[in-house]
Length: 133
Image (cartoon, rainbow, N blue to C red):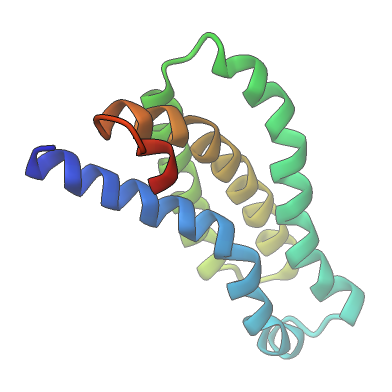
């Protein structure tokens, strides 16, 4: 495997790890969000729930699209959408804006996750490549 392929694999694994860890990381910020946005516990719980629901709902059309789209295109689109939505969420001035950004993050995560395994399999040569994932 070339140095470039190793870098791409490392970036891909890092991006997928962020998409999976996002709910856990955001859970640490819930007390701060509760105070900053002057909302209820239910309102703040939607910060976690919105992301999970968006990933679940976006997974169905993404699974259908997966058959027609190139996996690398899904990964790149997912990473761009996820990153842009993360920036919006980070600078959100209200709970509604944050929830909308979290929903878009979920869509980006679904795209990223759908394309990541085929890209990894194509990049990592030989037997045992599935175990690395």
